Image (tube, rainbow over all chains, first blue to last red; front, side):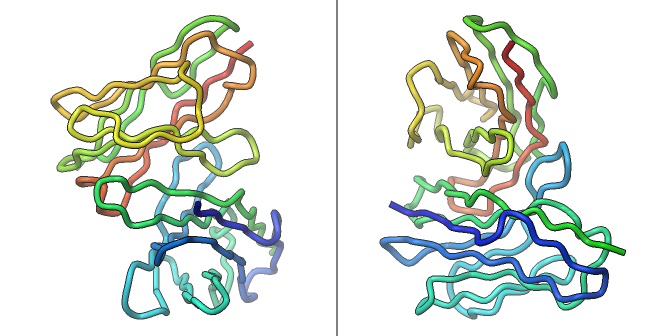
Length: 115
Length: 112
């Protein structure tokens, strides 16, 4: 069975500082990995995804993540935080299975950005 | 191009009642998945519909059922509502379950 652990339910950074949100996964097969962002009272928006190929993935709004198989990690980073980055972030894993494609999410990390 | 649309946006029901939530997938998508997001938690997979059939199901009781129509839209039905069913219900669509999943804004269900 697949699972996701997000380390730190709440991360607080200053505007302009590095953002690092941690995600570790467990999967019995090569995983597909995703980061989603959720603003208050909104649905989920895809930031970036790793399927195959290059392990460093760039997404929207300056975010990127690196797939490290040996560490079973997929941490999300952004060099310089902006106030608009304040939101909840979810890491998710999917085991590729043709039409049986479902996401297993972590519990989320709330990012606050201080001026 | 309309994205994934869900209705209603908010709903208040009484324990024991039944509720139906609706979802229209993004144009060109044929697969719909439903997720439950309790307060302070990540979304949990309920089930997925493709070609009008339930293809995969998460760990939810039979009180949760669904349907997919020929136009690919979908309904989630919950019977005998419990207080614990209060949550944000998210619908996600994709193409044949193989592409990126796009999420709707969700339906906030409150059971009192």
